[in-house]
Every structure is written in C-alpha cells, then in structure tokens.
Image 1 (tube, rainbow over the protein chains, first blue to last red):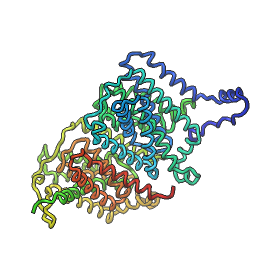
Image 2 (cartoon, each protein chain N blue to C red):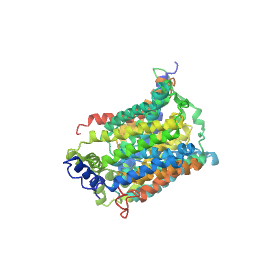
Image 3 (spheres, rainbow over the protein chains, first blue to last red):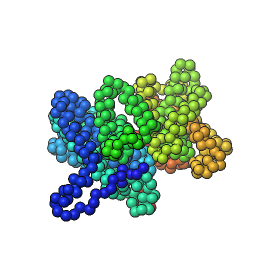
Image 4 (cartoon, each protein chain N blue to C red):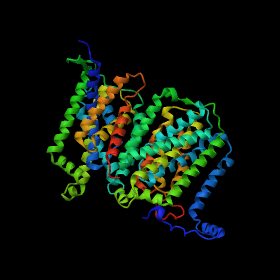
Length: 334
Length: 296
C-alpha cells in the first residue's frame, strides 16, 4: 500500500503568465478538494436549515467541534505515529486559559482563544520534544501522565482556577450560531492543515518516522524536530477546541474540562476513519458526534461501555478504517 | 521517647511502595515478555479486591485465605484476556499500538461494568490487623505502623520472591526470559509462543490479584482506584526501566516513599499534591532519558 501523500503525482512546475498559472491550478484541481469543499459547504448551511438555538447548541455545535479534535489527533496519531493519550489535558488547558483570560482579565474571546492556541502549541512542542525517544505505547504513558499533571495543577492552583469549585462563565453569553461558525472555522483550518500535510513532503517525513524511525533517521529525516512539530501543531488546535468547550458549557471544573473520555472518543474516530487519512475522520466525526451527543444522552450511564465496545470491534475488525476497503472509490478513501 | 513523624512517613511509604512493586511487577512481566502495555491492569487488581471483599462479606472468608480462590480466578481471567486482546492481533504490523488500543477499550468497558455492578461506594475489608499498631523503637524516636501494612509488605515480598524463583528455576520461566530476549530465536527453539503469552498474561493478572487483596485490606477502594493505580504502575515502570524486574522493585519503593514524603512535607495544606509524585516520576524519568540520548 502506498502512502496517501504519494498516491497522486505532484503538479507540474508552475511558470508562465497569470492565465496559464490559473489554468494549471484548475487542471490539477482534484476530486479530493471538491469532496472536502462540498462537505464543509453542507456543514455551513446546517444552522440555516435548523435555526433552533437549542438544536444548534446541543447537537450541531459538536459536529465541527469533534471534527477539529479528530483532525488534531490525526496529525500526531495518524501521520507521525505518536499515540497520544494527552489531548484531554491540552483540551482542559485550552478551556481554562480561554476562560481565565476572557472572564478574569476581560480580554476579547478571540484573542483569548489565540493565546490558548499558543499555550497549547508550546505545551505540545515540549511534550513532543521530551517524548521523542519513546515509541508507541511508552509515548502514550508519557502523554497520559503529562495530562494528569495538568489536571492536578489546575485542581490545586485555587487562586487562579477556583480549584474544585469550578470556574463559571455565565456572564459571557455568546449566541450558539456564533459558536457553531467558530467551531466550523476551526474544523476547516484543522482539515486544511491535515490536507496540506498529507500532500506535502512534511507529511512524507511524518509517515517515514511512523513507519520506521531508524530508516528515517538514516535518510536524514531527524525525528526530534519533526515529532515535536507534529505534536505542537496538533496541540495548537486543541487550545481553541478547549476554549469553545468552555464557552459552550458556561461552567467548567477540573473534572469536566479534563475528561479522558474525549481523548478516547477522538482516538476512536481516527481509528474508524483511518489513521493518516484526511476525509475518513471527517465523515466519522460527523456520524459519531451525533452518536455521542444525542443517541447516548439517554444512556449516559453506559457511555464508556458503548464507546469501549465500538472501539474494540473497530480495532479488531477494520484496522484500516471504514474507507480502507479495496472497493471504496479513490475520491473517498483519501 | 515520642514518635518521629518523619520516620512514620518513611516506613509508611515503604509499606505502600511494596504494594506498588507487586502491582507493577505484573505489568513489567507483560512488557518484558510480550511488549504489551496492559491498560486493564488496574481493573484486574480491583477485580481481585472485589472478589476478596465479597468472599469476606458473603462467606466470612479471611482475606488472606481468599487468595486461594482469587489467584486461580485472576489467572483464568488473564488467560481469557490474552485470547480476547492479544491472540487475534499477534501478526498485525502495528502490534504494540493495536494491543494498546484494545486494552484501553477493555479499560473503559471494565470501568463502566464495575460502576454499574458495584456502584461508586467505597469499600474496605475491616480486619482486626488494621487497628493493631506495631511500634518500632529507634534512636531517633519511635515509628508506628499498622499491622496490616506489615502483612501487605510480607505478601508483596513473598510474591516477588516466588516470581523470581519461577522465572529462574522453571522451564516456563526460562522460556519467558528467552522470549523477552529474542522472540524469533525462542520460536525457532520450539517455544510455543501462544501458550507462553497466555501463561504470562495469567501470571500478570494473578500478581494484580495479590495487589488487589492487599488493597482491599488497607484502603477504601472504589472503581476509580483502578486508573490511579495504573498511573502509579506506569510511574514505577518508567523509573525502573521497561521490563526490568530489579528496576521495578527499586522504582516501586522509591515511588511509595516519594508520595509519602510529599504528603508529609505539604501536610495537606496546599491541596492534594501527593498524586503529583507519580506524574513527576514519569515525566522526570523521561526527561532524563531524553537528555541522555545523544544519537538524534
């Protein structure tokens, strides 16, 4: 099986007049871009079709939110092979950073989310750098510990975070439609990032490290920088994701903002959608956002159980994801 | 002469550390022999704890005697887990990642089943040893220990010695060490890997069962305990080196003492920092490894 990034020939060298360049662009426009654009166009008109604020805040919002999280995990877990169990910690840090900046210090929400992205980018770079020598499962343990440490610090830093009493964000009322389009923009950025990585030498470098680190190093692809970069990019998306979570929840505490279940859900989505794919995780995130937020609210007691069983079956039965079968047309399996 | 609180904390830390040792040994065994990180290990330990608890509650069985039932039961569960989570994916290219995801799914399923069956209630087997103190005199002041901690440490030491003897003197133990050194060579020499792996998983689960009985006597346990102990085992393993039994023993004792001294120093005034010792142990061990590695 060839790597996804290498499946299509690269476009011819661009030269000549402006019209000529435009023509080359159009000619190399591929079905993948159409499929992605179409999907996001449908997502963009969803709140017009279902304008009820309750529907938007309880169901629709979570669709782009899960897409952004899934693509974030996909960068590190899918491309560079870093099996992260630390994304729940980054989500919590993003949520608290946004909430503290916006409520305690009164900054604009967008600025607060950008700062949250920078904070989680820095954390991601650090974790990626420390964990560079660790393969597979050991990296998972390290990230799990890092996230648990973040939760512990949040819990004990009472003067800033409120500790176990939680952090209320009631006074900051943002219409659900705005939250939805914010999440959609973030999902689009994340998907674009994953698409760009998959069509670039950067993606090839990540995949080389995933497949065989020693061979990659021998070929001049040094894991230290690339692994840090992959985890940093992945972490940068988690900051605003956490911020959106805080804004939509109106109230966060260390056990709701730091929830290991979110981490498991996004791993599940990437595994079912196909690791290192662009479109599969998007489709699966759209489906599972509905499953997790609507179908399971009636069985919230058994949420973990159902998630675990789906994951168990997916890992055993469809290791390459739903679009990994041979009969799936190539414009879907990318 | 009065009590020396520092000495009490130190001895208490060693007592808890011996529990961590026996718990983490099961995990180390799996990592060493099969390169499988078992996320369900904490919940296997709780299975032992609940089994001992219900044997005590329903039949009045002494928790030390209940080991006779707990150990074979946990061994059987371990073998079952092998055929559910390891055997089907043995030939897959990403074997380590796949088993990690499978055991993590198992972790979630077990957590939910435990909460559903036995609720979040805190349970403990109140033995007479628990309230009996042992006073150890020393020139710096007396140290005091609960008798149950001594019994737990004794069980942990016995389990460790038995495991060492098993690995050292039996055919299966030798096969396990061979498989951990070079899997292909071991296969070529006729070691049936499937059954060896099943036995290792069973042995690992049985060690978790011993830890579970100790936990049931010493602490108030509830389903979330499984996750806490999982992280502690990771801390021990990271400090001691992957699949290294001697390192695990040292790491477990160090972690126990570190936690105990953290809560002795902070004394609860600044929140619950003692759990942080685990995370710092994991990340610190990693950071040192990363700094020492020069080949990248």
